[in-house]
Amino acid sequence: MWVCEHRVMDFSEDAPQVGPADVDPHALGEPGVSLVALIAELVSLDTSSASDAPPDGWRVLKRYQSGAPVIGAPMDPHGTLWRVAHVEAQRTGSVTTVQPEPMPRRPSRADRRRGLQLRWPALMTSGPSTGDYVVDVVNTGPARWESDVDGFYVVGVFTAPGSTDFSFGWMTSSQQKAVPLDPGEYARVSVSINAGVWSSLEPGKYDLHAVLVSLGLRTVQPLSVELSGQTISENRKRNTRPASSPATRRRMLDQQIEHVRAQTYASHSLDRVVSAVMAAESDDDATVGIGRALDVNAKLAASIYHSALRELRPNSAQR
Image 1 (cartoon, one colour):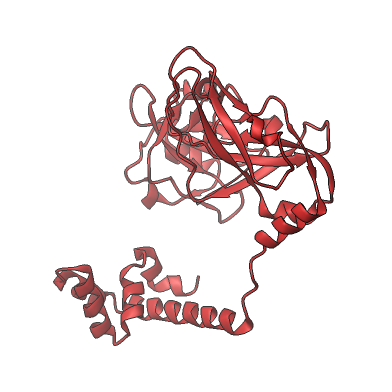
Image 2 (cartoon, rainbow, N blue to C red; image 1 turned 90 degrees about the vertical axis):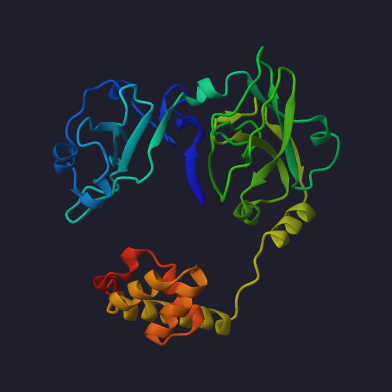
């Protein structure tokens, strides 16, 4: 699940990236220091998360507006792969975890989107606005454009006519896959409008801006739309989730409590859990073995089997 928020005017268009984060290009060329020395200046370190991380070469790659830094160290002499840690807060008791997966160094968004334009197709101006919008990702460059793990996920934002300063957020389980585009070719993609936006809109004229989020590419000109009361009402209904009943919420909470109790019980019987898993020839056998060893039903046995090991530590019950 991706959950992101950016202010368009804050995009670091020419900054290289390590994974999804913009980084200081000067920091990439620094020699760095040991992880222990750098982290000592910031917060505590979860040493188990850094057991296979480079011990030296660490440096601050960037700082967010909050002051929280992103630190990293290269895993190869050319700096193509990095191990990264996000220091969320600098306060007593804070613990920083090194990300388990190496992050690739990537060109800046400005470099990765070179040759692309975001254009409104004619069909968007030929009829009344319904709240369903599409936009074309067009290759205007002289060579084939291919994705560097970027997607074609586009977010739309309504503003007052003439306004170009706006913020936006998005949430998506996977970015819409990008496709190669030869010169002159285009891909037509949906424009995602945050469901919560419709609740605050009133009938009238708006400018609709579209942003291809992974590349920071936005439409050169906004789409002028007039939203009727009916369009707004229909989209509010479409995006309103039915509220769950108290009985449904109670069942969900009871299931969560039962699950945690099972994990707590298993944490004090890890030897029996491990024995059941080691003796099993399949996942189903392991679940049956855990259920038999702990005298729990198949559903709880499966939840124990699929729990992360840290969830079964005896002191995890307090958390």
